[in-house]
Length: 232
Image (cartoon, rainbow, N blue to C red; front, side, top):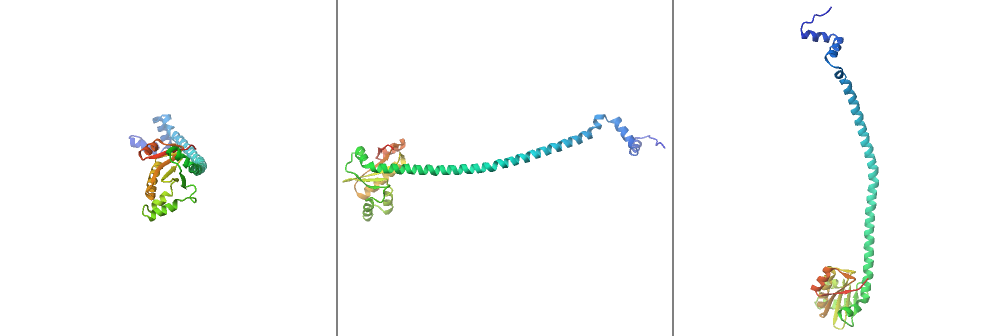
């Protein structure tokens, strides 16, 4: 029996009870592209899901490769650090060897250098830091401490001088460095002043080097420190 349709509510009621009527109405009301929209949305969802999976797989693979690279890189950085440390130790050892050789050379030639540069004759080495066991400085310093002219710390500082020469009435305190800097100049001045107090004699402050920095030359002139050049 056909249900009469008089109102919009009658249309809705008829559609609710008749699926074919619903489909027919959709085809009349909606165009074909709109009807395909649910299928397009499903395809789009599938494409997004596939793309998401591809991105996830790519990120996972990239992280794995980065981890494989980072581990050897960390080891390489550690090796480089150890290499630099070893190089620094080697350079330090080489510099100390060069410095020690130069100090021994300076001690051997100190008397001739003083005669040539300072016009001081009859000088001989009474102390050289490269041969601390064959010197006559400790006895001199002990007498100076006993007389109250210097204290024990000042005596220790004098025994850190590189070379000390003695003549009939004169002493020379020399600091030695391949490249003379301002610190060398000031150490020579300080130790020469200490030795002058210890001995109550005239003392010349000097530095021995293959070359001298400009600021060291300026400080030497101001502080009355002689510079004696001895090639390496």
